[in-house]
Length: 170
Image (cartoon, rainbow, N blue to C red; front, side, top):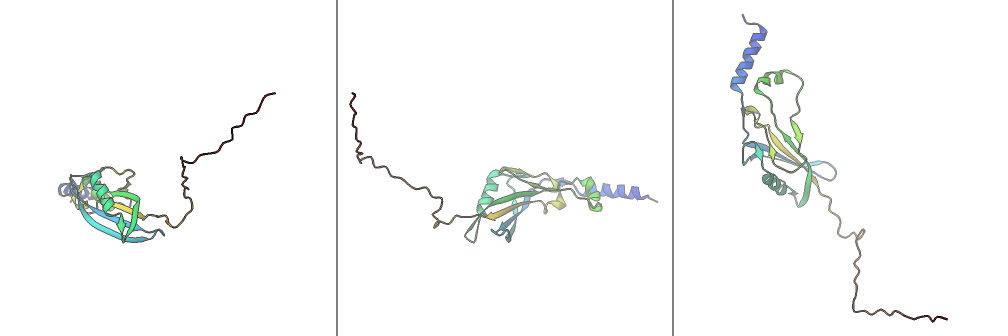
């Protein structure tokens, strides 16, 4: 008869043989639109094929941001850019489901540049995603005349009358 430890070891070996890491060829894209009152207006989701394995190129990221920056004729700007990439090792999978503690697989992107994804276990490929949070842009009212620089025109043809009088010495 097998002990509990032997059973767990056999289960772990089966998991390792069945689950393995693969390169990521597509990710889920989630775009969240937030209005001026910090309320979520809309959430857009789509599957985004990557032009190269495990990487979202800078040009593609900029195109995605530009394509999603307008909604209902309202302009939005980036509030946050997040990547969710589960990088769990196959041998840790059993303990991951069994334990109450979880590792944080969410990271914030601070610069708009090429984003690299680490290969992940095949069953988690649908969960790996790029999250773009867009905030409604505050546009200044054009009717407001406050803080406007006044233009001054200098007319060079205008002659200035300057009185050049000399005083006599005594």
